[in-house]
Length: 233
Image 1 (cartoon, rainbow, N blue to C red):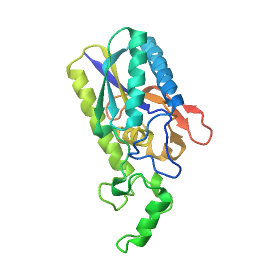
Image 2 (cartoon, rainbow, N blue to C red):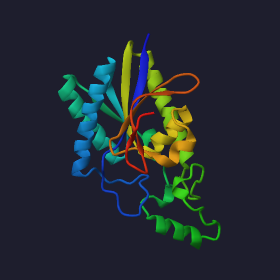
Image 3 (tube, rainbow, N blue to C red):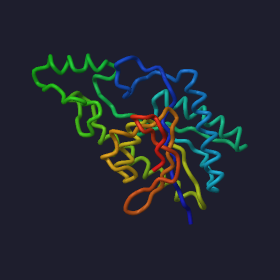
Image 4 (spheres, helix red, strand yellow):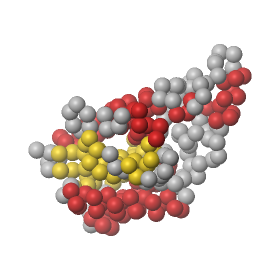
């Protein structure tokens, strides 16, 4: 009988312009981001060896460049350490929360557009972190909606893995901090009340597994926003 689980990895440090929501930014990793990815791969290999879990050969990642580059850097390190081939597969469903037609604008520019357009009200204070606020622009989604999107994909991907594997296997998913945290709320790994104080370091990772009625956390760590310290439960 198979025992499948997921390791969720946030992308490495990248070239984010000042004041712009990360969302679907097309920018790539900075040099330190590649080393963060390789370090994460080494930590994941050690973690899985300790738990006697096989790392699946397929790495699922977001189509955004920063996630793809993180996944390919991890792929190389997995191959070096484990002595077998890995492959990276990109998926739109693992992308960060989308802001639609205002993608790649600054927060100030987005708020100015809302103020200028007579059809829209001013966004609530702290709208970027609000789980249920969706910008009223074509293609935008809320953080909760992004969480449901990512959670659906994780369930489907692990379901496919379970049908084609036996034993204890983990699949690595490379994506984005906010989308992964909200997906963790949807699957029951995280209590929504904790979201304001939790984040993920660049190339931080958590090991989660399907369970009933809620998924559980098997390893890795979140980031405690006020202190930057790891949170392991």
